[in-house]
Length: 360
Image (cartoon, rainbow, N blue to C red; front, side):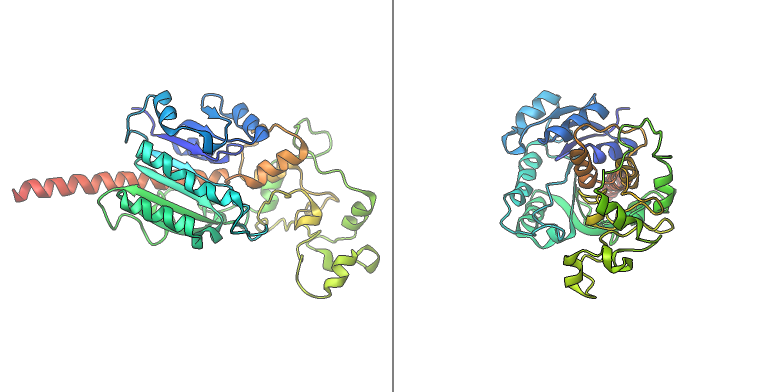
């Protein structure tokens, strides 16, 4: 029996693809127009057809014919449009041109008519009219849909990372989607998250490592001296006056930029891995005990990428790929949820038909 097929839109470095593969899907095709992220994707998912084009220029019908799929044959369409225009960490500009990429998802829905749709993004997208409009179109097309806000730590990811998850299933079963999306997880799925320290330890020692991405950002002498002055568990508020930045002094006791130069707490969850997740000045991204930022490999492990996952690009490009990724374990959990929902939908449909036959 063939595995269920999926197409990964806005695939990035392949975090979602890896998770969906772990859940039992065949990832048939992916679209990603960032050159460095696309190179990383190819290195790890060589059997998947990757279109490294702007999604605006991709013809869904041409892709469907290339894949040899009939309309309605695709199991899942997954999409994670760029979130910078919606993210609270960015400008949160409603007019950011990238926000309109949410609308590009619909042309693939129309062409493929997949059994299920999965959208992952930042929670603030939930109130955007483009997203609301997409859900309305899904409803009119026969997709029962619902949106949720999930913290990735609830499915075993060792970081606090709140994400918007929208699920649509083409079914006549109106009560298919649960109040909590995690209620649809298999009972034997391990939802406990390791600590940040446990995830970091998987990378091993930095000194002497042959892993090309187990390396930390090179720091200026003043930055290194500042980090050395931060105690275990501390942040910029613990710095003596001589190491405090003027911009932080100007903030006084206000908690703005409170995580800057903070050390990751080894016995707790890590903070959200951002596109600057190894840069101490940009958050609580300093190693728990060593005087350096997190290494790229340590950050990727917190994002639950496999230890053997390979990345292409410059240091900054890899850091960005890691921060932008869907955590692998979150994607795996969502893939298992989709499979369970589709199974429940089929069971309900069979029961409905049996009942109809008995009545007649």
